[in-house]
Image 1: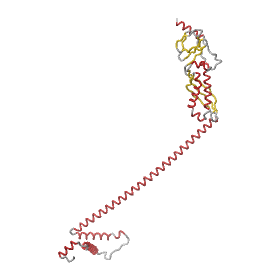
Image 2: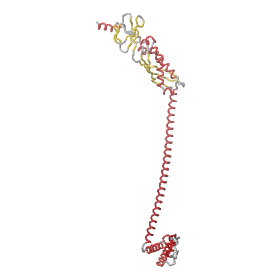
Image 3: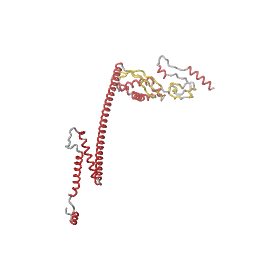
Image 4: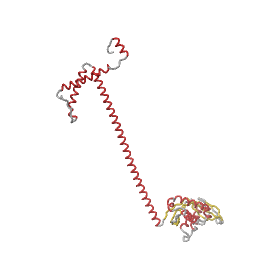
Length: 352
């Protein structure tokens, strides 16, 4: 029985659907003016749809998705609202920016119905009202910005338009989710000037980058030369210090060797036959110096008896003997102490 009633209700619903003539409305308005089902007592409301029911011409209730029952003749389905997100294409319009540039802008509007009652009875054509509100709001917002800021602040512009639309559409039961600007058309002359500006800006950046590169290269070269000079001076300083230290060590080594040689020589002279050895060494040095006279200079001073080698050796030995006697006589000339004087007087030393 219930199946037969449902089938008959479906047939009556298909036959009694009323549609708005396509010649009198636009495609956007056809979306809102959907077909109205007829009261068949038993009704099945689809998901994401809200059916507004009037009883004797007055609002009665809103049918929820699923099975619903109505009273024939008294109840009538007056509006069918879709609760899905609705996308509206905002037509292209002209707007003037703050710097008096005329722009052609179009956008896309995303809406959702929150209150089917307000949408049905708050405004006659919700889509047309929201579209006009979006266009006027976009004109007013663009009038606050210059041309450069319009391209840079598209996100803030979209958020401002959404905020303005929501303030006015709260009474209509519609919520604007977002608004996006699809395209911005600029006059040809303005577009050419913008391209020239972009090219000039790029040339400026290239020149600045090139100058900065040249400056950094010059700075690097100067820093390199400075470091090289510093390192060279430090190396020269270290070399001089090392050279001086080496010379000082060489002088000290020579002095120590000479002092050691003198000590060894003095020790050797105090031994037996030391005078004879010293005489032989002096004679050898005399003969060697005489043989090198012609090698050191062109001017040669020769003694009268150059052929008498034995006489020269005898003369050198006599000089050495005289110096040796003077050396031994020097300690005897030193003043004697009181003990030495008393000792001399006691033993009868005449030198006292």
